[in-house]
Amino acid sequence: MKSQDGIPKQARSFQDRYFWVILIVAAVLFSVGTVYAQVNDLTLRFIRIQQEKVHVQMMEGIAGNPWQYRIFADWLIDRFIKLLGEVGVSSPRVSVFIAFRFAQCLLIFLTAGIYYRKLGLPPFANLLGLSILMWSMSLSLYNSDLAFNNFFDIAFYLIAAILIMDLKFFWIPPLMLVAALNRETSALIPFMLLGHVYFHEDKARLIRPAMLYSIGSLLVFATVCVALRLYYGEQIFLTADGYSPGIGLLVLNLTRIVTWEQLMITLGVVPILAIFAYRAWPRTLKTYFWILVPAWIIIHFFAALVAETRLLLVPQVLVFIPGALFGIVEKNEP
Image 1 (cartoon, rainbow, N blue to C red):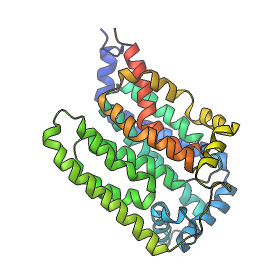
Image 2: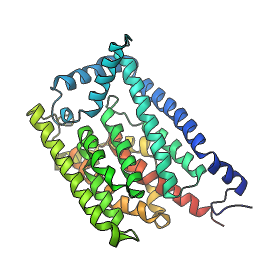
Image 3: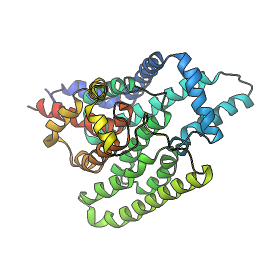
């Protein structure tokens, strides 16, 4: 006998029973693979020189605009380095950077697995999604260092999606506190909350608290952004390889071959497959798509070098990967 997704019921029962064990083991293995691929791509010498240089600039408050206002990851790393020193462990910073990236990857894979499960993906599809995510993350560091704030951005969006689906709105403002300290792109999280509730079957009961917590989250976000700029003062604006945000950067992104090259390397055809499978998506995934993807893509094409595809990992993990997998699950139905 087979279940609706085409997997034998005995195998499906085994997967469900041992889901957490399978997820933890998979997350560890995928994290090891991702860290190895990224470190091998960047090289230890680059991490030892460039990553440490960036970290020192961040802690000295001279990293420039907008990087200096993304302090959360470097603050944590600095606390960890000092903690090791206090307990008498002398460790080169390159080891701390690599260990920190492993911890980030572990958090991302665990939360992604939980998120995909809550969306309704069966365990086999879930693990396939995590494997695709490993590939995307491993090949996303073009023209970059370890980009700690980008990877925390992925984790915070996944955590927010899980909390929203569980209707635990109380935790969104505290999450916004750390997410805003990490990166200004976290601004869309409160709108995910509003969008989810607006299309929820219990909208009448949930809409008022959803609005209150969304407004509270936006206020937290604005307060953190203003406080960071007041604390660190005016910073030198650093452009994307000499290009300022606007039409010029949009044209550059659209016309450079490397943009499309890197998009294919990192994202593959997953976004295209996801769009074709749109009808099979659950309502929550459709809501996240309309709240997140159009704004995310437009903003980044106008304001960043899209060839640096780590910038598109949030829509990839949150929408495109599960969206494509729902197309596969639908095709496997009897």
